[in-house]
Image (tube, rainbow over all chains, first blue to last red; front, side, top):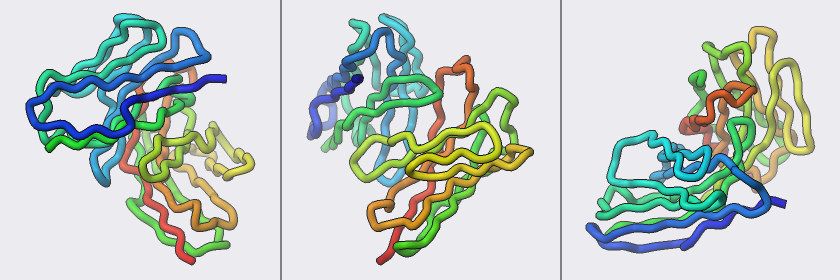
Length: 110
Length: 112
């Protein structure tokens, strides 16, 4: 069966520091992968999606970037965090028909 | 993807049937309607998906009228654990558009 992992589960980082969040999927090949962010009390905002290795589509211009170095690995990065980057970051795999979400990373930028 | 409109929040009581309606006036021929449930500090979870008329599973029912411009998620006999945010999405069944747009959802609060 398929499993999706995210780490870390929680993270507190100062403004201006770098960020790296990792997502890995097991049990499926060549999945579509997605990064979402959810600010406190808000809906999900699609940040990036990828249909294959090295193929990244950005939905929102910002100081975040994403990479897919391996088929089942998706990384979200930032060189310098902003206060507005705080939120709940979710990785998902699947397609429009059905998406499967990971446990999420709670990021607090101080 | 078609835009959807849902109530921002709803309250109900344990044991009641809850109906959450979603409007999607611009739904396209190939679009399906999908509902997700999200508990606090968790990712959304797929509940149900349908194209027309009625779909039922062990969790919920989905009612879609003939014009498909709206849909209603029905949760029978809710309990406190059904308190969550419910998202309605519409999109191309063939997956030609790989993007999924989550709106703000409906915050359902079940009272004892």
